[in-house]
Length: 215
Image 1 (spheres, rainbow, N blue to C red):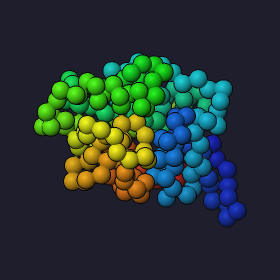
Image 2: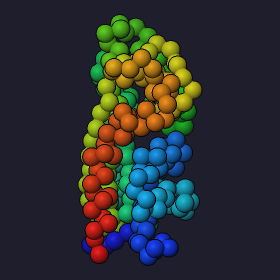
Image 3: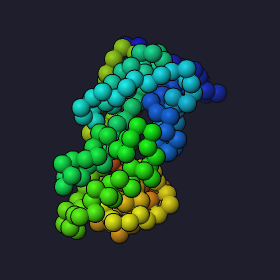
Image 4: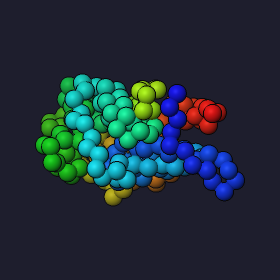
């Protein structure tokens, strides 16, 4: 098995490099926080490889896109890579925005543009039809190929107006079931305990830990 790029710390314990396949600063920050307990990993991102051009997301599912991003980056960068594809699905809108969440209002749309379009599309929905759920697929790949892919969801409702100044994406509209604050109003610590990305990452952490036992 091809191992991650490796170096040693002052106590001669191996430090493994792994790349977050994203340039989204909000997502990178969230991943770094969630991966912080893995202190024997040096967490990089695509921001450290400005010459790398990510592939077009041509998959039909979150899983397909996550795998595509992880496998291609791992081979090109010769490092282990973790990639996610995530978004918001509204059953009353036939699952939209779904895999197009990041570009719902157009290829160069901002988060605000996407939220504005979503609010417009939902303006005639009754409260009971404002159910929505975040989805996240996370793929882990080495230069030799895919190692694992997991999926998780987080269910809630969408408000008719934005609340909160934190988070990103659709967070100012999304209230998780059992909570009275939007994801953009929750503390970073709380969100990182209950989000779709946190739930998916918890499923894959065992794969990270197993790397430490490889020689």
